Image 1 (cartoon, rainbow, N blue to C red):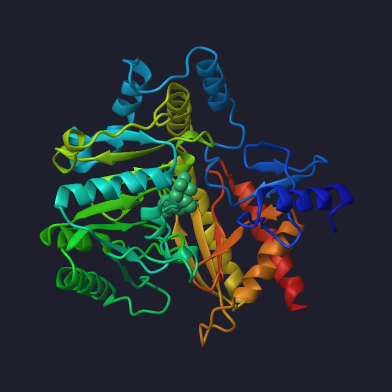
Image 2: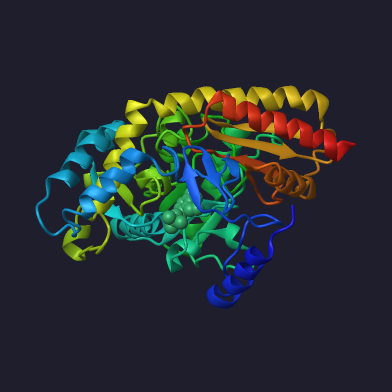
Length: 431
Ligand code: PMP
């Protein structure tokens, strides 16, 4: 339906007040006033099924998280330069989940955003290695600071890469031969390391999102990243797992995306769902990687790891565990992928179905023979579903891959509503 006059007026004020860098989703932007579980509600109380927002991973307005935030804010909200028990308790409860060497004797440092976490991780890597080179995937997004924006080609063609940033192509499992994918990808990384050694001082870090969110959502093959980590280390660099999207159970029972790949990273960065909407993010790092960093330069982050952020993070982690939400992500995500696989028999413009856990990618093509990306169709689906009160988005270089990434409390019933409405919409678009 068309927007009412009041909402149109708000959109004009928004443009005037917030300026041109702010974007709204959808041809008919959505006004929201309230959330609950997997639902958002507009100003008239109309319910929207949220199949997009990964931040509210334990559900919008989760009561346990809200109570923890309110309780801590009413008691004390200060920074990390005093001895406080809750931050230690949180570190002790999360560090074992990283597995491998991070679980043995890793450290965790707190920031407010994923950008800050990646910025810090990259600076630690550069300090540790004495080098500048960073390797990323071709459509990566790693943040909005000077350093991380320089590692984020998905920001747009005009966003300049950093001088020592090199890209490897997206491991496009839909178009590249599967049998040669792993050696091909390792070779791409090796070439960029060679280039960094030839023109500069070599590789400091390879950083990657193991579900390749902005590249278009690729979950397979899972053998892809372990040999990359080995190669990067053998050439003196460190492997940073950017878990800002894939982490905290999003991609299923492995809990961390890199564990699904069998990688033991040197550093892990996380954020987004960590506080279910309260700003809290972190870097987990091995002691040998950060040794010296704390002496050569100090690191302080006023709000990073503040008492309220830690309360939000602890409550979110407790709910994830108590309600077995990574298991739910795996089960309901598989249900959604199976549903789209059924739809593909009726609608061959569904070219490929990918993802892990509750991160689902559905690639739309003009026809399955040519595999030509169809970004216009993906946009019609995203907007058509919005009009049917279901929220998703699209990703990848051609923005032709439907991005379905709901709160982890999403149920099979919610999934069936998404699938039924998608089927009805595809029928309507075809007719
Ligand atoms: N890394 C990845 C993979 C992300 O998706 C994002 C956010 N989209 C970031 C880093 C940056 O996080 P933030 O927006 O919290 O700075």
